[in-house]
Length: 558
Image (cartoon, rainbow, N blue to C red; front, side, top):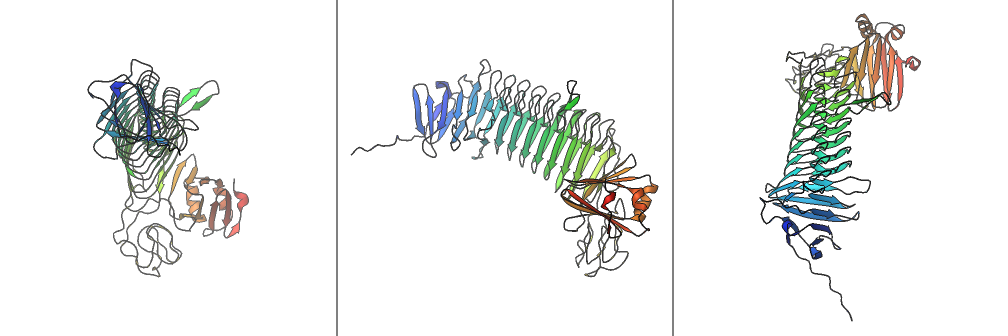
């Protein structure tokens, strides 16, 4: 009988000075096949790559190949020092449809040649995931520098990129036209960061983290200490020149500095093309639900939102601290310089300091400062103009109730079906903005609750559950616009309040939810009934229904 024995597995340390190294997935789980010089496909269980002398760079390269979808390759870089800047090669490249994990030990330095990233992983429809980590938590570091057209970490020239970072001390510098972390020239960046101490600097016209020149960036951050600096025309985090930024932040301590014409967080410069008479790129879609964020634009971009010529679609909610400053012509939070609009939703307990760039607003767009409604108790929003003068609006600060919640179920910032509401109208007892004025709560008296008075007394916006929900409002050009970041929402208002708004010059009201937008004529509504007649408009997904005095008048919707 013939018995075949598997090749024995070893745990080796591979010195880069001895030649180029190729690491592939092994035939069995937890193993690699390593080749260097005359050694071909040696089975290895714990692949460590190092330099004999970390102070002297080698010109040899490392190629990591997780070829098939189910392949997993793990490699440790331990005091590796590679410089291929005089060759058209990547110092370390990761390829294949499987997943690769790189563990950082010691101090590692990678510098690549023209058209390549320092640590290269190009994203395709079939490529796997690259994860960079320091699971040993021993201070492993990486300094990666791209060649011309390449990112520091991510894509080669004319290549998209995927990068995930969970730990380590990382400094990434893009080559000319490449992002610090993300896409190379004409390459988008798909970047996820959950931890680590990270400094990312974009090359010319590129984002610190996100897109290279002419490309966009999709960036998700949930932790870490991050400083990202975009170059001229690039965002700190988001898009490069002619690129947009799609950025989600749920945690971390983040400082983002946009270059001239780029947002701190959001879009790079939007570029007008005469060929189709359209602006390409520049928009910033930013969602922040946690963390401590400082974002600034050098000039013409928003602190958070659009780059020059770009709109800002910004949502900030949760227990979040934000300090945002626009460059000349850009909003602190909102649109960049130019004829661009903003859609801003602020919810939850937020602390925000927003400074306008010269000629723009602190929070909003070309239509003016956006008024805020429905922020949680304890929220504090401070606005200033470009010279530092306070321009805060009513509704920007919401005091914390001194007595806490009402004993019988009264709501401090929404409707209450059976008890007094401290922040709005109540079905069981009226309240205009402080203690109950129209009757006691059926479950208990309000305990010295002090909250902000509504910017529009008599106007109530509720969510699917019938409870008061936050919304944003903009007044301009005789229009009152109400925006709610929900699929289902309603607002109700009395004709007496409508009459007051009409006296202030408002002749049109627009109500916008995620999937539906409707317009109302104030004059048509006033013709429907007396002072106390209630008006209610409900949006559910893509449908809308208007009632006046309880009767359907959806024919008035536009």
